[in-house]
Amino acid sequence: MIETEKKEERVLLIGVELQGMDSFDLSMEELASLAKTAGAVVVDSYRQKREKYDSKTFVGSGKLEEIALMVDAEEITIVIVNNRLTPRQNVNLEEVLGVKVIDRMQLILDIFAMRARSHEGKLQVHLAQLKYLLPRLVGQGIMLSRQAGGIGSRGPGESQLELNRRSVRNQIIDIERQLKVIEKNRATVREKRLESSTFKIGLIGYTNAGKSTIMNTLTSKTQYDADELFATLDATTKSIHLGGNLQVTLTDTVGFIQDLPTELVSSFKSTLEESKHVDFLVHVIDASNPYHEEHEKTVLSIMKDLDMEDIPRLTLYNKADLVEGFHAYPNAIYPHLC
Image 1 (cartoon, rainbow, N blue to C red):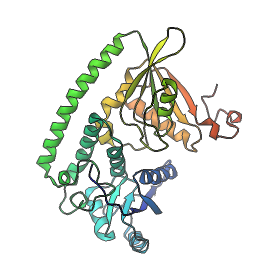
Image 2: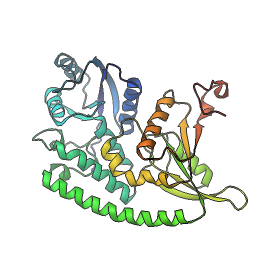
Image 3: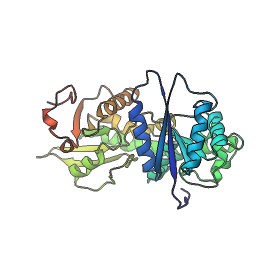
Image 4: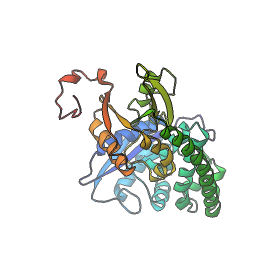
């Protein structure tokens, strides 16, 4: 990870709401939380309703002029778009606005680069960033103008971002080779666990739902946990005793989020699948979050993609103490309450 400048990153968020789009407000609030997690100061947000995204500049030309005035007046240093931008859109936006422009996907990749602690985690993030970078090696566009560092520049490093396509592909091949070796070792350890008679429990849930805190409480051991997005990236398995001679293993892994970049899903597949080989899942939901229903749908959708929907599952409403009159709420709001 390269060193970033100490100056304050002043960020403007941009979101376009298409007709019939679900959870737009949730997505924009998450974008603000992601930006703050990356160390930015969110100055303002700009929202627009459109029938479709502008193929050249994402927002319409008239609105883009308004945004440019806002960027100048508020001394914005980075614009973050709540969508995946095409390389062309990215370059065009930077040319008009005169500041660095990144999209939601790159922001999430940047946060993963901040959070990665293990060798495997760093390799997985590096791989995801290079896969994101490859189609964006376009002249003087965003991915070749990283001299200033800052948000959106963490991970492979400045010099890596200036490599040509062939070098990036070689990097990808090399990292995938290293990860295959790590996965082979992980598979060996997993097979030994599967062969044992120990009952295996997995924790899953949306990011910042409190999985790691529950893990620490149940195991009386310390794992990094904080009230922030993606505090945990590496899968962790620990043994706990549940009275008598009953011993089980508890596995915690990376949290999910809406619109998780496909590059990350691919790179972290082996880590995510640690929860696939368990006997029982505990789905942790932050009951205090007003968007907890959308969070649950996102997690269940990703579980389906990972072929995990048939594993027996218990829903655990966490942080209920922050919800006044929690047990008085109807099952329509908290449908899994017993």
